[in-house]
Amino acid sequence: MKSQTKFWILLGFTAALITGYFLFGFLPMKMKIDQANANMTRTEQEINASIQRIRQIPAMRDLRDESRLTVENLQKRIVVPDSITSAMSRLKSLCAEHQVKIIAMNFSTDSLLYKSRVSGAAPSESFELPILFELEGRFLDVGMMMEHVNRLPFTIGFTDFNMSTQEKSDKLNMEARASIRVSPLRNEQTAKR
Image 1 (cartoon, helix red, strand yellow):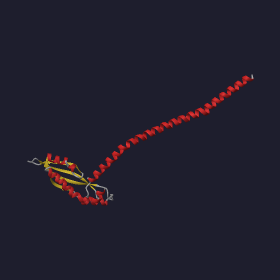
Image 2 (cartoon, rainbow, N blue to C red; image 1 turned 90 degrees about the vertical axis):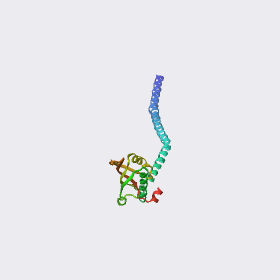
Image 3 (cartoon, rainbow, N blue to C red; image 1 turned 120 degrees about the vertical axis):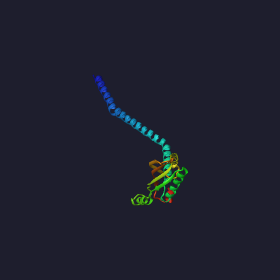
Image 4 (spheres, helix red, strand yellow; image 1 turned 30 degrees about the vertical axis):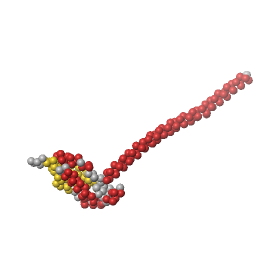
C-alpha cells in the first residue's frame, strides 16, 4: 500500500507539475512569442513602407525640381507695371508679323494698380489686368497669330471672342477679351526672384 500511495502521490505531483508548467510557463511564453511575432510582422511592414518611401525620394526630388523650374518660368512671364508698354509693343509686333491689325486696345493700369495697393494685398501678389482688343485680319492670319501668342515673353490669356465679317472683304473683325498677369513689384525685385 505504501508503494501504491507513493505512486499516486508521485503521479499527482507530476500531473500538477506538468499542468503548472503548461498554465504558468508554456501558455504565457507562447503568448509572448505570438506577440513578438506580431510586432516583428508590423515592424517589417513599417520597414517595407519606409523602403518604398525612400525609393520614391529621387522621383519626388525630380518632381520638386521640375515644379520649381515651372514656377520660375511662370514668374518670369509675369509683367511688371513699368514693362506693360513693352509687352503690348511685342504683342503689336506679333500681330503685324501675321498681318493682323490692332484697331483698339483698352485697359486701365492706374486703377488696377491703385486697387491692388489699397486692397491690402501683399506686395508680392500678382493680379490679372483685363484688356479689350479689337483686331482686324484674315481668318487664317488671326489663327496663326493666336497660335504664336505663347511665344511672347509674358503670359496673355484670351477668353472671349466675337468675330464678324466685313462686307466685300476677306477680312474679319474680332473683339477679344484678354488678360495679362501683372506683379506690383519693380523690375529689380522680380529679377531677384
